[in-house]
Structure formats: structure tokens, C-alpha cells
Image 1 (spheres, rainbow, N blue to C red):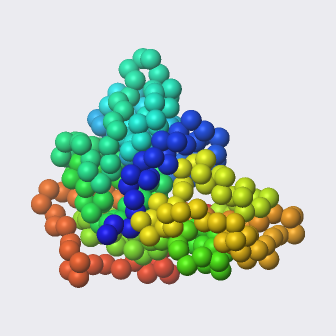
Image 2: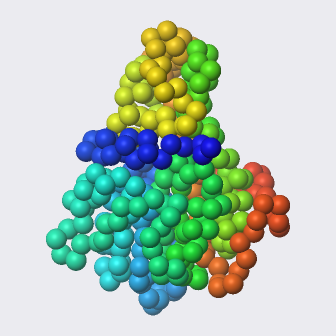
Length: 299
């Protein structure tokens, strides 16, 4: 059985589309930092290099990144792709009336994009909803031109660790998704054949008045429990109270409850035609944590 319920994910982000921007401050900050990696495309092509012909924003949400890339590269064809149709309706507001970017409703695990057609693939905080990272990256590679730039981000295992531990005190059912460690993230890129991957990591701490405030924000941004193994009935007052009591000792001096978010970033280059995709156990290069730079540490 797959880890995630994709229908639940689609419904959650569809419901959150209208209010997503107001709740997703962290996502917007990560998006801004990920956009910095687009500079590597100019460095690779040189000051007089050509602009990308096709730019793909995977898991675009309200498509702020697609709009920014459309402004950055006005001659490029920019495609904003998302699983939730209501998100694409919100994205239309960013597209503008003059030469608007394209919007496509699709699953990132099966991109309806021509092979070898994308120069830049941008994917911000969508890969945490994928069961098979190597397969997702192999799909990215399929649609990218040789030498194309991939920039992406996802959440790491420290994300929502306080919430995970608190609910574990009162409920055997999981309430927080498993997130890949940075070495696994890097290995998945290598297995798919991407070249010269560079990984970075941030750690943010957000604060909330109480546990219900945190849960409301998660629902508002569509980040609800989408695990197949989740409890399919209401958590119940007793279990929720037990989780709140377990969370309470973490309250800070300012009276707020902390919530950790670990963000992993990567940029890499699509390989030339014919480069192998490595299978499990075949020439897999591990990425030791000691060799991975921490670009910045946010609070």
C-alpha cells in the first residue's frame, strides 16, 4: 500500500486554495530562497546565454513562483502544474492578461509533459507527498532537456517533531508524515541520474498560542494528515487533550509553543541522453551529512 492517500491530498489542497496564501508564510519564504538557485542557470549559460525555452513549476499552488519566473524570462513558455484544480484557479490571478502562463492540472508522479522539453523545473515543497522519490526524480528527468536545471525543496525529518511526539503520547495512529533525511533526498537525485547535485538545509521554528492554533494553520495550508494509516475517525477529545498536555512542557518563555520545520533544498542538472538510471543496490552514492553544507539556519 502507498504511504499517502492521493485523493485526500487533492481534496485537502482544493479546500485550502482560497485561503492558502494567508496561511502559507513559511512556504512563501522557502519559495523565495529556492528562487535564488535559478541564478545557476545564468551562470551555466553565461551572461549572453539564451533564456530557457520551457519552464515548469511543479506543485505550483497559487503560482507565485511561476509568475516570478515568467517575469524573469518573458520569452519562455512557463507552465504551472498542480494536483488541485482550485489552486490553478487561484493561479490564474497571477498569470496576467498579456501572454499568460499555461496551467495544467496533473499529478507530479505522471507529468503530461513531452520528453526532453523542459529547460528549468522548479518544485517547491511538493515532494513530501510522494512515496517514491527516485521514481519522481526519474519522471522529472524524463521531461527535462539534457543540461536542464532542477531546483526543488521538501521537508526533512525534524519537521513537526514536537507535534509527532505529542500525539504519540495519546494515540497509536500516526498524525505526522515521515519525511526523508537529507542523505536519502540526495541519493534519490543520484539514482535518477542527475548530475552535480548540491543540497542545502534550513531549520525554522514557528510559534503558536496553543495546539489548536497549530492544527488550524495546518488545515488552512492543506497540510492535513494524508497517511493511509491515519485514523479515519475523529481523533477524539481524550486523545487530543493528551497530545496538548504532552506538548505543554515545551512552552517557551514568551508563552508560545514551538514547531520545528526542517527544509531541504537541492539543485542539480539533467544528464546527457543515455545516462543510466540506477536501481536499488546499484552504484548508489550516499551523501554523508558531514559533507552537506547548511546554507542558513532560520528562526
